[in-house]
Length: 394
Figure: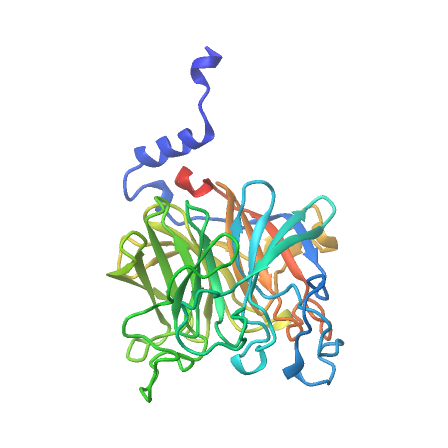
């Protein structure tokens, strides 16, 4: 009898999701307060062993108690995360020090990390730099060896496809970038038709219609592995204030399909931080304000439904109001994730999310004023299941 009742978790979730009517439980509002279940932290002043100096364009005045330039490359700015299913994660550093002009000596890199939630620490296991040795980028790069820097691209989102390669979303173009499993650019950057940021190398005197570094902040891979869904951080000129475009990109055809949705920010002053697919129609999106510390007011995780062109939003977690009954991290019964930029979300199981901050080293000080933020990795248990497609965990 027990043997007949045994069923895998994935099959159970799939059966439940398939049996639910299109407008039934998975899409009803009603998530309650989420709970902090894990806390791990990587110190802000963590550097890549044996790497090149960095931060020469930051000057020499102390910033939040640390003095640039730095003798090595900081392990910082986590703007995207990929789960590897062995307890480790790939995390993407963004363009470095926040601008094209000051990040020419910051090497774009994917780090491999392992959080230890029992001890509260994060181990950096290695990683790889992003490079274009085959000349797929046709405009001048910063370095003659064609190692990519924060003056070349502002990389903000990352997914891994079934063949083990990576697609990364850039904000300067905005472009989609396809890399091998070791960081080698595999094809020419793919532009977004009709949209150009001020940093786009093909402006040729044309007026940009997207704000500076407001390109692909979030990007999800479809659960069937056939499409990408990049989401702009900024509003395209002519669109309503606070309306962000989400596009569909066909990985087999290497082309945009023409399908487009609109994510509406709670306030035009807000931004999105990351996104991930839950099933064929639903995604998780981080929405945040640009504030930090006690001033922070909006650090939210929404479940959005793409069956309407205007994405329907359901709040699943308020990252400034997480229950913390175990006092994890040495914090009180209410845990706040008060960072200026929170740019990473990953689904760990049907009720647990992993969330990481982009610490903007050395500039952000949301946890402790005057001290650069660490890279924190938290796990958050939702008040009820997402009923995600089992392929999310592959």
